[in-house]
Image (tube, rainbow, N blue to C red; front, side, top):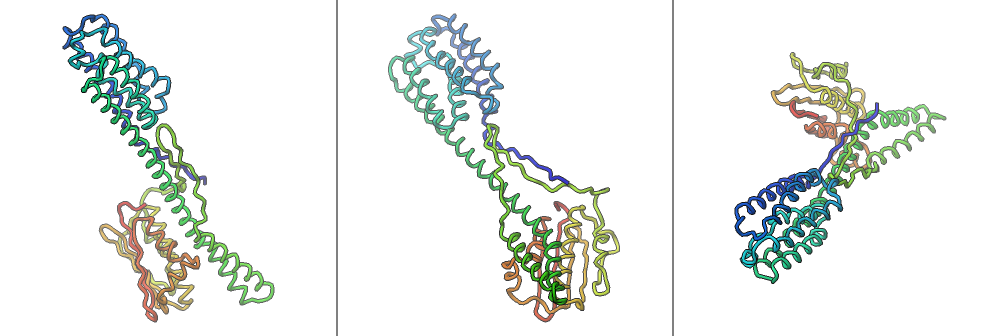
Length: 402
């Protein structure tokens, strides 16, 4: 069954575009309100009557343009900045000289900052610095002299727009880093899952062929030797982290996109399953199963993985404790979790042997047991005393099990 791709879209700048849309509308209304309240300061109100309808129509009609970086094209930014600069330069034609000398607002007022911020969000701090320059020049021309308050406002817009542009660039870089980290995590989880499956099937078969071939001898011994070589090579492959991590993140205008390959969902039937039915097949002459009298209900995927971990623990008992070893399975159904304990009366595990085995690529405990429980949000605890057997305690939460 083909794997299903889960697409994750991340965009830390999208809220900035939404905020910019709101800012443009509010500052448009503010500019019109200033004109109405300061109508007496206008020598030629017909200039304002011509400019403000254009400003309102342009602001409302171009709201889709400032909804995302993809829609905010260079042509739009240029036209938007032209309307802002033009409004500043038209101000001396509309208001009295006394209003200009007193530091009165320009026709677009603070709406101009929205044009500069669009450059900052779209292209970063360099674009913001470029857009701030004509605005600064227009303000100085409108005032006629570099007055203190004019210079102060020009520098404020310049610094604020460049700072916002820089923050946007940093956010985009962080977004790409996060996307890459998610890809690496997904690839690592996939490699661990494949390693568990290979350990539970292929590696065990190769190990059995090697042992049987050595016992039979002749041509079978040569076949066993080849199987042993392939087992070592395969263990090295699955434990060495050679699974390539594809560069699937895309630096799109709407944000980074990560496509994570997920396992196809199996048919879960009618819903949660009884763990006891999955563990019953492990009961045998030398494997005792103790379970509650009531069903032990878990999500299907969690129940299957827990049962597979129990099977891996029993495989270790047969392989390392011998066919004559006795094993016990105890199932405990707690209110918030399910605990399955696998205990044997074998010789136990020498100190340091698990670390050595993991270094050799033997993943029975590291992946087939602990890896499965970790993916379920649970834990696996192993206690072994030389000469007194081994006990593996597997704990899975009932809520949040994946």
